[in-house]
Length: 239
Image (tube, rainbow, N blue to C red; front, side):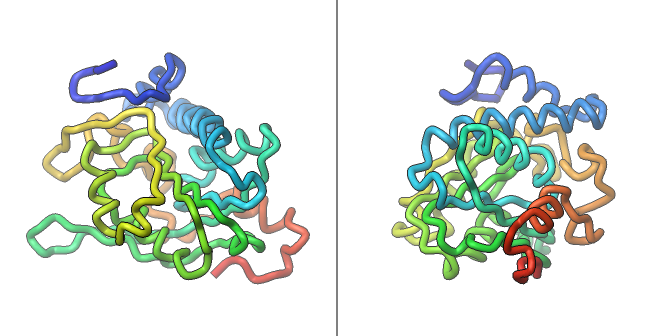
């Protein structure tokens, strides 16, 4: 199915198309959050059918996605008797003034749920994959800590070139482990490089956040929940 320059994937359904339409600056904050959570739940169902090591896989989230998209994935997996570990990264995402439009996303803080290093599969979640820098940074942060055998790159929307750009950032021994799970790809960008329609703009303001969590010290509720409910909560996990 096609709508303008948007191409839908094999995983799309009528309900996911409806939720994608709600990822718009015209939607209220509550509607936007609900749509993002629903998309996470639906992505979680797909992930559940893919993972092999059902108690040894790690959800990898940005801080801004943690309470809605990633929480939807997490809750969906838990409801299906999967038991993911969770890592959350606070990325400071900014453009480099090199004339090439490149950007970087260094990690300022991270939450790593105790036991994460035993995982064999990564589920890397991002609200929109426009380029490669955030996902690349988060995978690199784990590459020497987790001996993973599979990496699922999970997002509601991707730019049509993003998958290849991400693969090009890694040797074939790593990129061959990637599997992309998404509902739609877009091929248009605005003058600032934002994917259109994408997810309606910058996710921070649309979710009611003042700025990037790396700049504001925002603590996702999902991280608080896991830190205080873990039997190993006395172990250092937030750095």
